Image 1 (cartoon, rainbow, N blue to C red):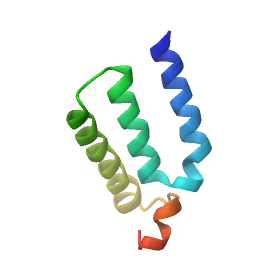
Image 2: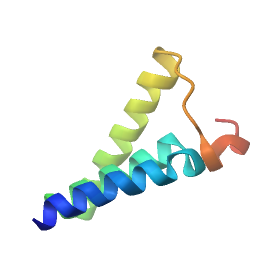
Image 3: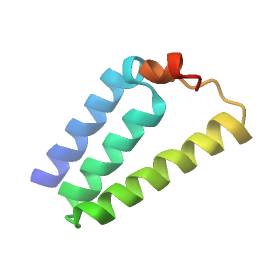
Image 4: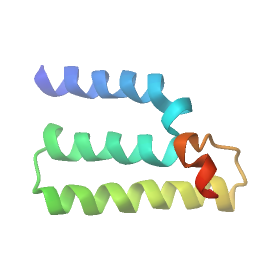
Length: 79
């Protein structure tokens, strides 16, 4: 039950902070927590996978599919 509650909780947090924090960072933190705590792996593995998935999904949706995703706090940095 812990894993289910953690997963649902993280998805709720993802939904609540998505617009404010932005797609790339929200996705990064969601994947990081899920990989690190739901199915425990080392921090280095968890960080690497979270970076790859968030960067890959950003490229897919923002660059290739031309979707208008919220950049949140990264907006002012030229993203």
